[in-house]
Image (cartoon, rainbow, N blue to C red; front, side, top):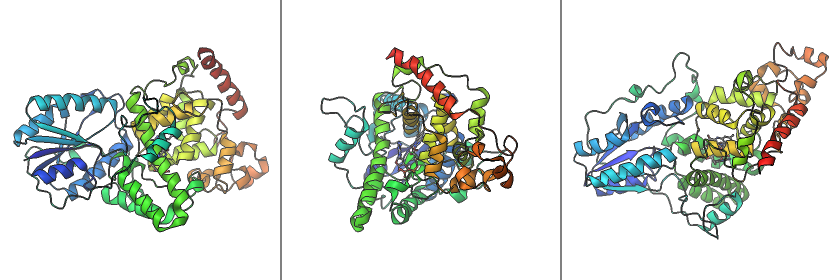
Length: 474
Ligand code: FAD
């Protein structure tokens, strides 16, 4: 039996259930379709950094699977057409969970079935299907801790090996990956990213191995330190499905079984993987998560017009070094450390009182790991408008956060080099440094580095005053 295997957010051969089952049954036509947002009406299109990643990830997959056919257009038309062209009897894919993708796949499944195809979808991107996870009283989880407790009771099957042999059939009409035009030009803001990242299945597995061997030890505490290497940086690999969460789960357990001192750190790491599952759970059950406040009372918040403040935040010119370091790391590498994501997001929402949706859009465009579920859940968590969110009144102090989590100033010195000569005790608040110290460090505030865009204490007061409007509603 010939099967069309449609690759989407599962750009891998190992632990790919759709590919695995199709390959066992006979020849396959492997297809990837790039769907431009103009055609699908996607309101949260793939950002620039994600497009860079996708280009390289597809190239890597094509090397391992030379028969992969690349197409551009609307999958609703292309999939049935291609399946008919090659005389396939079946169409298989691994499930996606974004609301638009669910709608597209549901429509496609029923029209393909009407046309007589066997259609099967598989679980590959998550450990637990969003509809499999239920509270004791039934219904979706809204709080993370019981979700994680329940998740730990569920079995996670062993990952599947890559198929031994793939019999791919040829198809005329595919295009080259370069024709998708995914890479930036004029300016090439991603110059040098090949040295930072290794998109693709091989790179994903290497990253996990290195993390488990060298960086997992101490993860529980050190994951909060942007100056240290103790996080996995697996997020873009997981987003594009270059490695499965089941592989991550089992290999982490194996690492902890082999070295007892890793047990607590491994547990903490897997609990973060479970935050990803929780975000998908929320998105599935509350499909408006990317655009609407999960707590509608937040609709009453008096947001400021974004204007120049938003631009200064995006450029890393707020005058608060930890925020600026994070925003510049993001622009220069396509990544920002989780602790700094929280600080920078809080600064936009609370210090500048700019609607979280502006931040979500910027992150979506600039993160290589931009992910509709994790990004919207992350922003709503910081805003206080989300499920199980950080309370709004907890306003991150960018001065104390900087001093605590970048204690030697290594992270700030790397990304805000104009402050490199400042003594560490002044690095998180250069505006409080004595003029003589600034002079010695060669820093002229307002010239070499901006004065703070807002005063922390006043901004905090204004943020809390804005929150009164939310409290009044409920
Ligand atoms: P590790 O600490 O090594 O964690 C391992 C994996 O667990 C991650 O790769 C990720 O898949 C998952 N994970 C970790 N923390 C979280 C979390 N808080 N929520 C959901 N999953 C998590 N993550 C994205 O993948 N894409 C996004 O677009 C995204 N946007 C965010 C926006 C904001 C405002 C915030 C506060 C967080 C966001 N996150 C997002 C979550 C988190 O910051 C990243 O997953 C993490 O920094 C990725 O680095 P890592 O792989 O080294 O993480």
